[in-house]
Image (cartoon, rainbow, N blue to C red; front, side):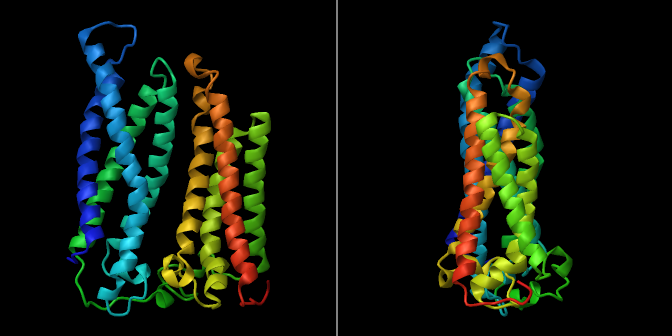
Length: 333
């Protein structure tokens, strides 16, 4: 194991979050099976009193989930100096078999945690706990994912051994790599860039349309998912090359380093934020006819749609500016 302040913070935080979520899940099961707002029983009153505590506790827990994703990547980048051959987080995560699985699970949990926080915010606006069952059911889905993340992350950090030989990002993210094959986006053609910009513009346009007309929620959610995937592939395919000004450097982690102005954090924050906001518009659609939310929810969904569109456009603007300022010229572009 490598002793580093952020490593200890991540391990302690994930264990605490796991216990808090397990505790909350026990009440979620009771809510799903026994919740009856029309009842004045002692059991119902007890559940209602606990609801405020549980919601607050989960809000902090899932807030930590959002933060821990970036803290994990930051930590992986910081500890790369302990490993022979590593130049950034790419090599650190490859130092054992738990690194990249942890990253993937943390990414999934980031998206789900963001959506749960949106549901929780909307539920707090209603006078009759309108989303209490939906939040509880969603929480039970998240429990195994959070526990899996804690398990993978603990094994990753506890099994790290200093001075082992690992691979550098140039090897892991090359066009011939076995870790990330070229079929995922290392094909530098004009079509790749056209797909990226057309997808972003379609998604942003769908968001603005929903903001103005209040229609197309599910289309926006679907477009946000496609835009997120296409954007990630584009970062591998050509965006990273322009930032590094090297046609063979496809690493998605080096852009997080000081040498590149930490621009990667801004890129990923705007991309993930746009995806969460876009997804949430569709997730909230089944509750638009709920009486206590009928006047609140449509306006909030419009705000989410606008937020998603703006964040995707900001993400695209950052990428575009870096491409325009880059001294690299790729053939076929």
